[in-house]
Length: 363
Image 1 (cartoon, rainbow, N blue to C red):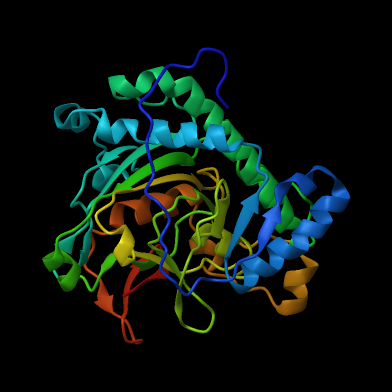
Image 2 (cartoon, rainbow, N blue to C red):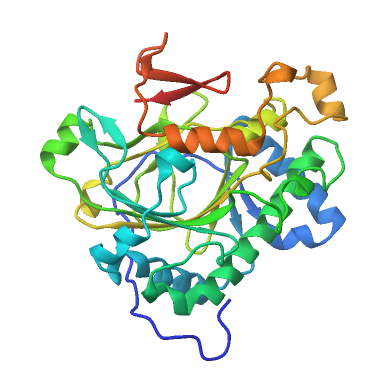
């Protein structure tokens, strides 16, 4: 990803992986190097289909970035948090509630978590077109690298979308055509930094840092990092940890993928909790690529899938009320962590209704 004489940058040293024995989720590992040929994609499509249908998460290895290049990305990811003053951050803070977009900074203590406790997560979000907004001065020298990084992630996204289309027995580019690089949309790089909380905050929130939720878009690409805190709700109803794999990606489906696949691919519920004891006190730096359909894509179930025809197509919306991706995403982004939730029928589940769909939060 880096070329020539890239600007120098302080090295971000990640914490060591946990040594505690945790109950890890058993996820498929997809070798993306095999996707270069039709035969390889056909093989991987079966793995991706089963993983995304049964669990909603899988790993990717051999994605095209070397360990050194990935390390460089994390060095850059720490810049907006550690090398920008609080005063300058204010100038680049997004108006999430009014705009329904979270580009720019999201400050700590913005989201409501539980028990009167707010989050300790700081975000910096960059549209895949890095020129759409101004950025803090310290980050500007790295914008060419971030643009290249976003493009690389988008290529990975398109490969994943092709595999999932093959799994539904529809043309390979069906989902790719809904996720253009140059289209108007909310696909972006997100850097997240979680800060340790007080013992009182941990007790009041039951050690939950982000409640169980589904992501809003189609696919989320998470660059694996060593602080254990992410858990998924497994099909048997148990919360299980995500294992860190060096230089691997964690892929999961979101709401929009569940909508357009007729419920075949699951938007899996996941949460973030207090790390294991030997990692407490560290910050947790995350690098993500949140992938959403183009804003004008109507979130209707894809047509022409013999798989869905055999199983029975499930529609999430009444046809006339089906929102576009832009409408859905703006509503979800604006509401997250800010709206008053109501108690659902299931214990520990809170609900809200957005665009006619029930959105659930798990605690």
